[in-house]
Picture 1 (cartoon, helix red, strand yellow):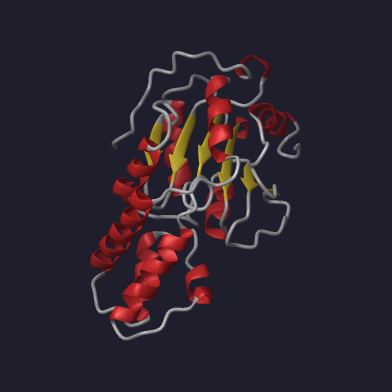
Picture 2: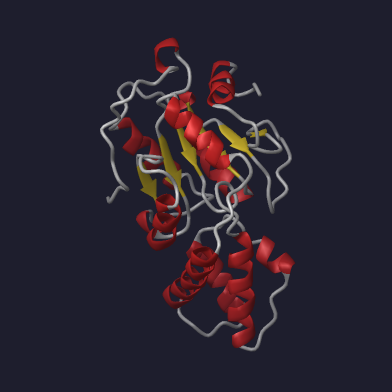
Length: 243
């Protein structure tokens, strides 16, 4: 499994000694960067080029899904390409959009920086594949993420828990004594929160394109703007209930 890049964790986690926050696992699309407009535009253009119609409602149903799942739906909508070809075409269009303009979600960069300052390791857990994930990671300060888990690294994507299991196992190899209830996942979509929750990871849902009502399995925060590492530590210490 490739990692991007794996660091030696030289810093001291300000929370580890008192049973607080040990690590944070981040979704990317819609959580750190606002890529959804690029995905939606790419889907519409691709379907239209094959003579079909793709609405915003159709696109919203794919938010957070594994790319093979989305590609299969696009084939049903009339895109006469193989699954791999659809994934490559969509990814290339989104990468082109991000190279033109990258819009970060409110509070995401600031929280990442605060976690780094407090010595809390972070990893990216995304259904986007390597080229897109690396582009976003490289737009952030070096060392922001210890490693990336991307959609092309797992056999089952979100909402399956496999991506979060892989992320936890990889982080456990870097952080001694890692405990799952002391690791926080941050997500924005229904498939994402279901994946994280199914892995046993305490999950904060920050809605963007998807409605994410609190149902007891995850905690909904309306935004990451103004959120600090101390608040995530409090979330862990309160058993996943603090703000």
